[in-house]
Image (cartoon, rainbow, N blue to C red; front, side):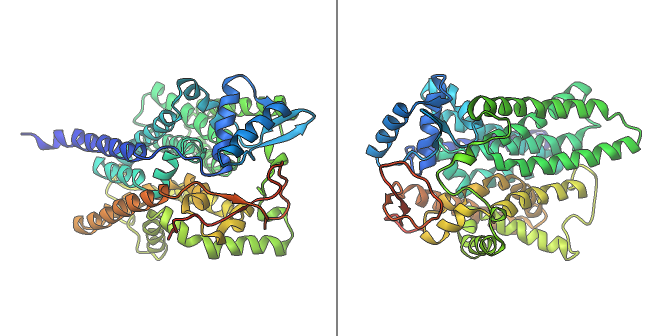
Length: 453
């Protein structure tokens, strides 16, 4: 029996089995609307499905009362002008959900996003190393606690924010690793899709522009290098630029129609504090960063255990004892420029949200980890790629042990998170500069009944 010829299919079958197990784990728990964001996306997807990108005051009052009666708050809509209320968050995920709103299954939409991301991750890690590494990375991704929690919450944009930028970034890196091995047509498709998905992720979450900027800068550097080597770069620029331009154009048209200007967003009208440290004085900005750094590291480790492996890899490499110092061939090692892009991707997410006003206010409330850390989810894919490559450098016994611990922790923390009852809101707010409709006049998050680590 020719075992080597069978092994790739075995790895793919096990990866698919892992996806199905994770899917069953997610479906084992019903969708709960934990936060105002859940309610906001639910109402927005329904409104958009009926062709209403804005709603009247009467509609808002009715939907707000329905949400209040169900125990939630509708805070993702804001009054932008007389008798006109608009969704204040990025609209990309809402437009994606419209089809599944018609089908009555938002969970199907989340599952397709997850499947697409898994496929791209498997493809990328196979190109970087081998299919065993790809399987390792896919399982780590699927059983990351925060990933499972956001997959289960189909009415929140966190999984989509990761899936679009993860798939786009993964295809982009795959292109630069494989451009001399791909046919002209396939290379064009991959590069166009990468640009499209990366910019579409900005339409899903505005702050993903930081991730898109990392890839844009890298593309410019690689284009200059290619030009110096006398390679044709114009077709690449046109394909990548056109792919990115289409979703950007759609987003700008939406903002003109809804807010009257291509440069106006719903954040300008948001009721909740959605600013960052740079919007305030130096003293207040420092306190926001300090609170996030001090209070969020434990929830982040619970949400993203793979972060420990990735940070250990970074420290080891920075000290000159890297796992990538001895190259065997270009297919089995991580090129330096790809390694830099992966870490800049992580820095773009963590560096931005460590300055987030909202998380600094909530960090001391002892809330379930998904509510505090979901904004960091777009950094998961580069963390998984780095960790999978590092673990494969270890002995089979050691990486198998770490791998098993990550899976067990993922399942335990996910199950614990979904057992939390819906977050309750009571009067007497402690956050500044919040503008809320009535009822209620003021809110504050309180600790749920089941404590989290």
